[in-house]
Amino acid sequence: MSEWQSWLALLLILIILCSALAVLLLKNHVAAVAAASVVSLALAVLFALLRAPDVAMTEAAVGAGLSSLILAFGLRRLGLWRIGAEAQEKGEDD
Amino acid sequence: MRRFTSLLFAGGLAFLLFSLVATLDFGDPPMRIGSGILAQAPAQVGTANIVTAVVLAYRGIDTLGELSILFAAATAAGLVLARPGRAVSAPKPGGFVLRVGADLLLPLLVVIGLYIIAHGHLTPGGGFQGGVILAAAFFLPLLASPGREPTHAGLSLVEGLAGGGFILIGLLALWQEGAFLEPLLGTGQLGALLSGGTLPLLYLAVGLKVGAELSALLARLMGEGHDVGD
Image (cartoon, rainbow over all chains, first blue to last red; front, side, top):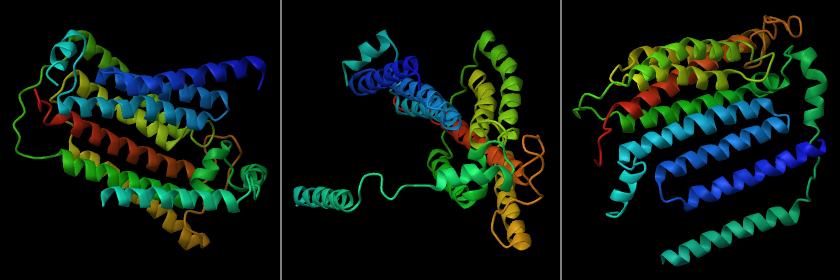
């Protein structure tokens, strides 16, 4: 690994950590799902950087794409799919 | 009582972890199987992508286990999600841009998915990745114009045929070579599209099975009961 690759890996790890924290701290469920998807996406880039392209493809397709889709549909079935002003309005009764 | 149980559980877990750490030295025994597989896989299995050689040839039965886990999970989810008898209000179709975009993307995504499956033994990728892309491709038109349900019978047929094909190839190898899922048909020339014996066929089965299963699951999730809670 050359030097710029190490710095890139460090940046990716920081992105992963920050988005994982955001998943826990965000009040809006839709935003939390999006943040979970960002974790997977950055992890996929990290895998590609570490020369594991097979795992990177699986992570990008399953982690970033499919699982956030499934989480989003789960939110919709539970009636938690609210964006923006609508979310703040309804969030008060929860 | 409940606190006592959780304390017992945490203590047992800590004991297990401690005994593992105490008895095993870090990085010992060294794993040398990787270099062994790297050295002999291209000649023995004939795939340019060594990962495929491991996934389908050296650890083929693990892949069969993964497929059965996926099958069980998708079946259970389908069982829970497909509750009959609930009237669903007619969903609104998507806008013009969404519908045309979905129609444009569908063939592209199908081609990419099939390419990744067919070249699984040559380049990174394979049945699982391509299958997920195929599922996404067939899910797009459903997103753009909901209510156009896919035929679950057809998807189940594809899934069953692909899963049966995987096991059938394995049994054929058991009959011919004496080992389950042993690659047949010779290795071919390294790097050619038709190489690696039965591995591309196995990956095609994996891809079709994963794609059919996941698109059925997504359609079920999307289809019914989307008004709960509103």
